[in-house]
Length: 257
Image (cartoon, rainbow, N blue to C red; front, side, top):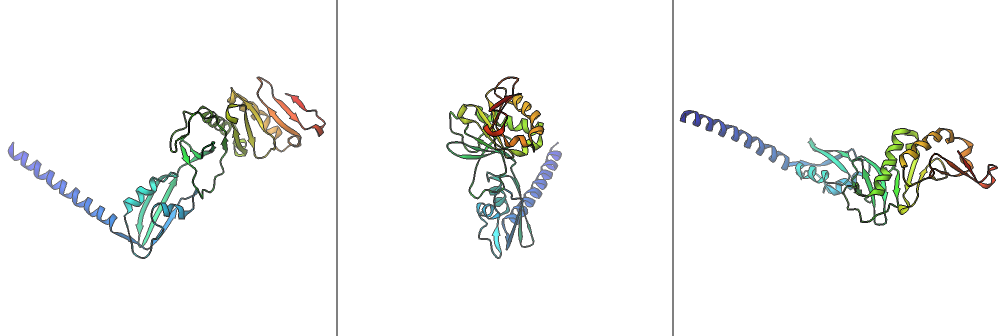
C-alpha cells in the first residue's frame, strides 16, 4: 500500500513539474516578445488608430516589448469588441478583431447608444464610422440608461426593437429602407423610410399587426408615382389604413383603404 502511495506521489510530482515548466515557458514567451510593426484587421466601426490607442500601441516602434496577454485583454474590454486574437509573426504584431453586431442607434435626451444584437446599450464613441443602422429616437424614459446595460427594462425601446425585428422578418427590402422609429416620448409612434418623404403613423398598441398590414401596401407603393402625392399613411385605426394626400394631388386630403 505504501509503495503504491509513493509511486502515485512521484507521478503527480512529475506531471506538475511538466505543467509548471510548460506554463513558465509559454508565459515568458508572451511577455518577452518584441515587435516593430502592428497589423490590425476586422475593424469596421472605428478607425485602426483608435483601437491601437486603446490597446496602448500608438507608439510601437523597433523592437518594442509587448505582452500579448495584456493587449488581448485590453482589446477584449473595448465596448465595440466581442473578441480579439493577438499573435506575433516575425517582427509584426498581428491583431484580428471581431466587433459586436449592432441592430440600431438609440438617441435619448441624455446620450446616444449603439444597441447590440443581444439588446445591450453600447456607448456611442467619437470617430465611430459605418453606422448605417435604423435610429430609435425620443423614447419615454423613467430612468437614465446605464452604459453597457441591457435595455430590456425600457418599454419604449423594447417596442421599437420589436418593430425592427418584425420588419426584418417580413420584408428585407422594407427593412433596408427603414431609417427611424420616432417614439415621440410616449405619444403616437412614427416610422420613417429613406425612400419616401412621408411618415407611417403606427400609434400605440398592436404595433406588429400594423407593420404586417403596412407590408401589404409596401410593394404597391414602392417605386410608384403615388408616393409623390402622399403626405402620410395612418395605421392607428383597427382594420383600416388611411392615406393622406397633398392638396394638389387631385385625390382629396385623405382616403381610406
